[in-house]
Amino acid sequence: MKLLFTPEALDSYNEIKSASQREADQLKDILKDLLDHPEAGKGAPQALTGALGGLWSRKYGFCRQIVYQILPEEVKIFAIGKNVLPGDLTPSSNFRQTSYSEEEYRSVLAQMAANRGKGDTPKVGIFWYSIGRDELFGVVSHPVDDYSKANASDGRITCSELHEDVWKKEFYKQKYKSDGTGLFIGPYQDKPRGRVFYHIDDDTYEVAAGKWLEQYPHVYDMILKEFNLPPERTTAKYAIHWDIGQSWR
Image (cartoon, rainbow, N blue to C red):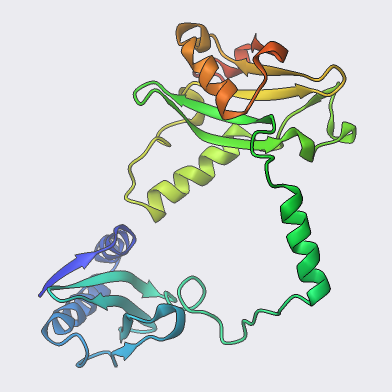
């Protein structure tokens, strides 16, 4: 049997080793015992049920746990530390789903049916462009039909999301929920980016971007396709805010 860690579990393991020698020793001891007999031994091993069926947990130290999966040739560690079962991993015993009434269910289906075929509706939003991969990424888009004149500022409509906020969220997911690699590296403004606006008064669109778009003009076609924009009613606009390296500050 060999021991494998998910990226999140490995991060936790390394943090424990650097923060507390005592807890690190307790953890090493329980991991060794776990490899010798995964379903028995120290820490009161327990097979989890429900949504966590197929996983096991065992305790170590004070209020610490390990969540793992037993495979034919290996043991895979999913989570290590304090409070790893409550919240994200363990379904609450108080959690219950309620059923729609027949009238509510018909209403929900009718609402979804009304949106069928609207996937090609023009959209507003934000985006980044990866030069290395030659593709858009971090796209946030919303159909213009979701907005009204009340949402317009000086006749323009766009999404409420900001590049910096989306970047922080995606960077966090990339670092802590994935393997740490990806496109969301460094400051958000150091990658080519832009925003799509809709003019509600004359039914036209703007693609706002930095001068980088003139260096990579083919990206304009990518943007038109991504946001389903009508070419004859869309113009490309420049503003220094979206130049590479520029931001609010």
